[in-house]
Image 1 (cartoon, rainbow, N blue to C red):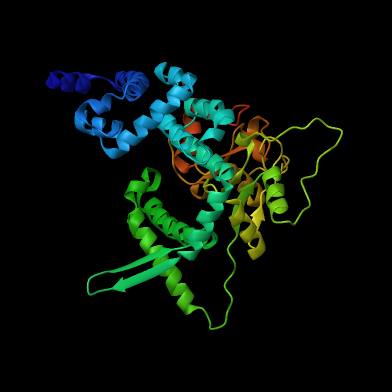
Image 2 (tube, rainbow, N blue to C red; image 1 turned 120 degrees about the vertical axis):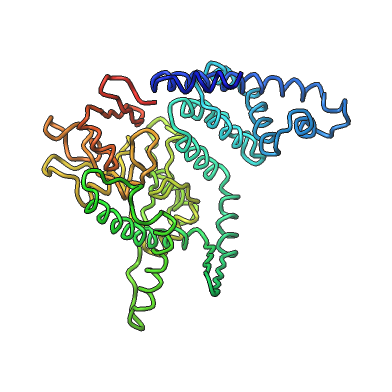
Length: 418
């Protein structure tokens, strides 16, 4: 039986394999939705008691040999679907990714703030339908950070108090391990990322010189792990070589915060009396999904950490308009450079091509609408694309950003990727 499947899959063309993959994933989504309903019924009926199990976990481990992680995730999804039937329906219809639903279910199961997710469930579910998993995860965890402020502050304080480091050096190898609080972690990551980018660029220039147009990252002379180790070594050597008493340049940490969140931070710290508003205007509460408080890598940041960075003095503010686009520039320049390039990169943590994970620091800043066709050189018309996917536009691929800020990439035949 399986041999027949092996033969059928091996004989299929690329288009047929992709079509089959989509069919299998839709089937998986339907199965997960039905599994959630079955788990609900078994749990409601206390079926697990029949074999003296204390809970559903015992039954699932015994009957279907699930791991604890599977038991936890699937029972969370079962309870999410019971609480929000629309989520189960969209999962069963194949619209929502399984991983996205698992992430939403994890947040809904949070005992401190799970009951606050009701206003956000529609937004998160829609995001799980149209966005990649890392985007869903980033948005959900950012909401958790804001909704559970007390716990976020406690984690920030605890992490700073638990900072630690140790290193060893033996005859054959050595190891360095460090644990920082969030403020030091952000600053030190910026420093180490600069060293890592320098190591990456050195390897890339060597690769281009040797292979020319055929250059690719897998042809680089060092592995990513080796470059990370060499970056730390270079940073330590540079520190040791600095003149005694000299002051190292402070790293610039880019933090992205919307105006309302920033005002809330200042009010909580008693640096502003209260958020200003027009007494004659209808109140327009900020929807949680529109809130922004994260690093340039997209990692959620506790507002307390933002305040500490402000006090430390090495924070760069990214000013955005109502659509979340940084300060506009006109069409005076042909290329995105300097602050204009940084503004485009500030909006997205990685290359905007579907599935790509190249960080923005290693991307080109491209015009969404070509300059030659009237496209302006401002952040609203820019998007970060890695070298490979920037060149794809020369082969007929096109890019579009919709009104929701989501990116769409189309093949030369007009069909959309993903």
